Every structure is written in C-alpha cells, then in structure tokens.
Amino acid sequence: MDAVDAIKRQVDLVAYIGRFTQLQKSGRSFRGLCPFHSERTPSFYVFPDRGTWRCFGQCGEGGDLFTFVQKRENLDFRGALRLLASEAGISLQDEDPKRRSHLERLAAIVSASVGFYERQLREPGGEEAMAYLVERRGLSPETIAAWHLGWAPAGWHHLRDFLLNRGYTEADMLAAGVLVESEEGREPYDRFRGRIIIPIANERGEFVALGGRGLHGEEPKYLNSPQTEIFDKGRTLFGLHHAAGAIREKGEVVVVEGYMDVLGPWQAGYRNVVATMGTSLTRHHATLLRRFAPRIVLALDPDAAGMNAAARAGSLVLGFETDEQAAASARSADELASDVDVDLRVAALPPGRDPDELVREDPARWERAIAGAVPFVEFLLGRLLGDARPASPLEARHLVDRLRPVLLAVRDPVERALYIQRVARQLGVTEASVAERLKAPRPGRAPQPAGRPSPPNPEEVLLAILLQHPALRLAYRNYPETLFTGAVEREIFRRWLRDPETAAEPVDDIGARAARLAAYRLPPLTDFEARRAADEKIAAVLRERIRMHQAARAQEVSEAEQRLGPNRLAELAAAAWRGEIPPGEERDLAEALIEELELGLSIHRRERPPAR
Image 1 (cartoon, one colour):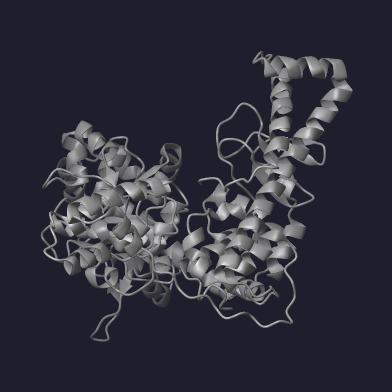
Image 2 (cartoon, rainbow, N blue to C red; image 1 turned 180 degrees about the vertical axis):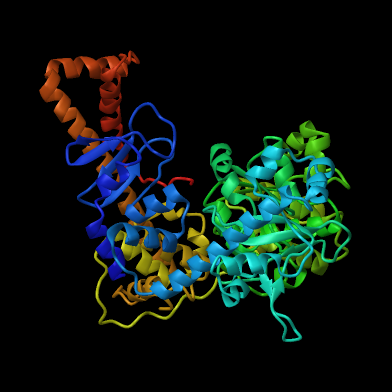
C-alpha cells in the first residue's frame, strides 16, 4: 500500500476538494457546502490534520481522499488509485506503459470504426438503414447523431481498407474485434457487414465495442463485438455514459435488455435507462450500478424468460443465488445474507410490449410501470412461493429453505418481519418457527497465536476483530461501509462481508493489508465476547466522529464570540432556543450554538451507525 500513502502525501486534500466546493478556514478544519447534496447551510468539513472529510448534514458521507474521488467520479478503489496516481505523478507497479499504449490503440481503432460507419449511414447505400431507424424505429436525426449510429456496407473489406490507410495493423484490428480471422487462411475480413452499427461505450464514454443489427432476418439478429482486452460485456452496460447524469439526478436507474429499449426511452426523455448486452446482469454490472444510484428498477420483458432474467439479475444485485439447488443448499445464513444497501425493484410491463414499444405507444403507462415497480423481494417471494400449501411439515421446511436466502437479503428487520409473517401465514406455521429456521450460526475460529503486533487505532482494531471472527458477519452485515473512514478499510470490510474466510488472503495489496490486520495480537475471545468488543469499538468510532464535529462547531462559536462579544452570543443562543432564528449570517451561528450543545450531549449516548 506504499502507493496509497505516497499519493496521500503528494495530493493536498483541501486543495483537491476545494476544486469542487468553496472551502473556508474554520479553526483547524475547513468548511463548505457539501458537493454531494444540495444545501444552503454549510455542513461539509475537511480535516487536513487527519486527512479526512465528512458531511454532517443530510447525506452523512465521509472518508479520505480516495473515498472522495470514488464518490465524486463514480469509480471503484482501483479506478480512484489510478486517477490519483496520475494526479500525483506516481507510477503504479502494475502499470505497464507498453500495455497502456496497446489498449489506447485498440480504443482508437474502435473509435475510428465508429466514425467510418457513421459516415456510411449518410452516404449512398445507407438509405435502407436510415429508413429503418427513422420509419420503423421512430428515431429522430438528433437521436441517431447523439448515439453515433452507423451502417456497415455489405462488402468484406471496407473497414479493413479504411483502417489500413489510417496506419493501423490487421493484428490490432483483430485484437480490437472489428475484423475476423479467415478460417481458410485468407485475409481477415470485416466482422460487421450489412448491419446497422450501434457503438458501445464504457461508463467514461470511451468507445470499446460495436453492436450490429441485421435488416433482413440475418442470424444472429444482433451481433456484438467479441470479448477483447478493452471490452467485457459482463462488465459493460450499454448507455451508461449517456444515462449517468440522469441516474444521479433521479437516484434511480432502469435496466432493460436491448439497445433499442434504451434509445426509445432516451429519445422520449427517460434518460436514466441502461441495457445489458446478450447476457444476464452480472455481479460486476451490479457493483457498477450501485455506484450510481440507490434504486435499481428491472424493466425486463414480461415473458417467462424475462422474469427468470429478473430473478437472476436481482439475486446478483442483492448477493445471493435463487435457483432451487443453491437456495436449498447447506450454506449458512451468514454466507447467504445480503451485504448490499440498495432499493431493487421489478417493473411489471404489459405482455408482449418491450420498453421501446411501450414508451412510443403509451408513455404514461411506462411511467406508471416504473413508478409502480414492486420491491424485488416481494417479486421473488411470489415467484418462489406461488400458491404453495405444504402437505407435510417436511414440505413446509423445504419451502422455508427455498425462501431463506431471499428473506435473509432483507436488511430492515421490520420489513423482514412482515415477509416472515406473510410466509408463515401461507404455510400454516408460526412466525417464530420461520425466523428460527433462518438462523444458522457457524462455530468461531480457534484463538489466534500470540506474538503479533497490536493495531494502532479503533477502526483497525474493529477490522482485526471481524477478520478473526468470521461468524460475526451475520451480526454486522447491515452496517454501512461508511463506518470506516479510509477507502482501503472500506474495501477490506466489503470483502469481509462477501466472504469472511477469504477476505484476508494476500492476493493483492488490499488483501495483504487485511492479512496484517488478521494477524494482529488480540486477546482470546469467544464470538459473544468478540461481538461485545466490536460494539465497543464501533461506539468509540462514532463518539470520535461526533467529537470531530463538535470541535469544528466549537471553533466557529469561539471565533464568533471574539467577533461579536459574549453578550451578543448569549442573546443569539436564547433566541435560538425560543425558535427565533435570525436571518443572514447570524442564522448559521445560532444553529451552530444549538448544535454544539446537542453534540456534547450525544457523545454520552450510545450511537447507532447511520442507515446508509
């Protein structure tokens, strides 16, 4: 993790965050409007001596330099590391200049291909394709231009010859996926021929692949670029670069199945729609989407295949399997429980109407379908349970086991209790018996040997406890990763939630850091004692967070007292407690006076982690 520490030394946290929100000195900290939510009163603080930031307002976000970049740029930890390494002028060990140049060349070939096909659509020979897009699919010239749609002529070497003239080699064209190797040993030929071209970009808007739609019943109807070094359909979502802004604004992303199911809604003004490309939603897709929006709506075809796809997609987003064999397996509850804080829903579309058709023919019905999307758990319970009425206790137990991963994926205890109640009534058993069946504790690990170093701070002590006691996962699966300040610590916690047994495997630099934490010297603890110790550390972390906020507020009050005098400050405090908040700058000061007292009191209360 030397690169992480080096970047933190090189990149000034205050200066970097100051690019996105105006910061003002406030004692030893800096204060400004939160860049992640709208507010009129500044509640966002940067603590340069600690290398951290936190919003004490509505969103409650916080972290270090890396977490700020992750949230601001919608990147994972690796992406933030690369961006900040470039910012700091630090070369990462795994960054090979030759490979980077090679990947950039492949992306340039795809981009040049997009431009070539886009021009072909408007030249003689592209009339039929243009007519299909405009007359059959109802796309406007503006939409066609915005998405860079094109036409691949029917010849064998049109694109190859064009790219050769641009100085690219056939080997690179093959690697980029735009050419196909001839089986007879002849020259490579164009992969796309006689097809409408739909460019595919990654979330940063870089063209990485192409999709081709046949006009005359060709098989397959849609042909995609193959897997390449720059394109993985299991990691790429069509339209995300166009939809990102609308997704963040609405806090919701709609997932559909095809290119046209994105283009149609986009043209109609529904711009928070993305699509998978000939594959089910993958875990990588789910991780990517969760970085953009808290709510994901699956708007897949209403036939059996579409509903099965919705079930598979939802299970991946929530982190469990839904097929009967997996759901009935002997895996324990802490392995099946969800670690995802996302509002996942399924929209019921009319039979025989895909999203593109529905939006064009009845936009109001599309809006109702999305607005009326049901929670995924409710959708899946209905599919798995149906009208089942068990004929025996054994059958009832088997049904509960099928539903177990779904119920465990419900984070909120009240919501889960309601679903348990529904299941119990339909099966004719008690709610307590269903709840008991969900419990499958695992034995704790043997005590760790002595002679290891001790962790230096409460957050690392907490991680060490969790890593050494994997059975605690069920107890802490609903805790947010924002409990930890640093991006590295959050990534370790995420890995522990996914699989406590492998989280400390030193497969990379983060795993190596986790392995060191797992080797820290802790006293021998039972799982019960470990949970109590973990709770104490969580309380300490949260108390420290409150103290930081109180210190920042206290500094503001102290500066105001020197500026206005103690008498005016006392008058403001009294007015604030009477609810007579003054306007202008003194309003902020009055609120700070109240907040300082409330923060002081809250330090002595046992705080719960925020529900985010």
